[in-house]
Picture (cartoon, rainbow, N blue to C red):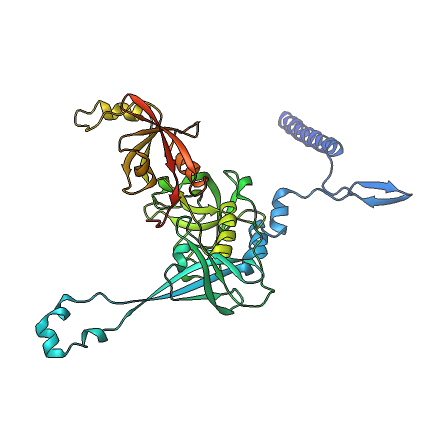
Length: 404
């Protein structure tokens, strides 16, 4: 009576054994088709001898086994980056109480003159651009400083002499006497920079020496007016590499370790946005500062606003608007500086600048660049629209005396 049960068990066992056997056969056949991880490396025969062909390295293992490109870039320029400490002595503001006749009679006339002065200290960065000891930095780092101390990465310190300052472009050149074998930062070209390129900021933010931050180039040709620095004439490189107080004057590098900009400004109300002066602009300014100690900038003397038809229409439909503006593209003159070239030429508030020397002008930044590229004393033919009429005015550029 138990034989049927035994036969059923045998049939089940045989079925399992058959399944296992088929699985083994399929596995063996697969191993014969697919290349084995343990098989010998491919070889190539040359001259009767066999040589191994190098296996291709995976990107992950290559990144792990090689030095970071950031490390290589910083090593290339790091020794040329310097720390700049400044000191400035200012007289304390006089207390009106000290000017009181009764006080002077009681304490004496010379008491108020004995009040101590105040020492202001500053911190910034810079980098060496010539073996003779020329250091490039920001103007606001060394401006009005009584003493400038330059500290190299190896710990040596030298007194720095300011050779030239240009407030308009926020650039300065400082000279140190440290022999003729100083490390020099390799200068690249900001013309070749593209949005999305790597950006490496090197400097001394908040006094933390030799600090490196990494980001990308966020955008190019960000005008100083857009940044909110109206007294400068610059088109910045914008980056998200962290830039903090103390980074000013330090280099912004590309992935090859070449200087593409000079870290110069941050917006206090922004997170992760910094700005750098393009190195091509800095090269030209540095050469003039080294030669002449200053840079002459031509100007017209107008405060201006980019005008579009939509912007003009918004103004014209406002019943409280004090003036009607032509609904065209151009540059609206908001104010004319007294005794300026624009005032002498007859430009008036409310004019819309349409052309300069026959070239259409459609933005305030474009007009500023045209004037900046002109020569001192050059006569520019400016076409303006005033109301419903157009006029041609001749404006002779003059030197901008004060950045503010």
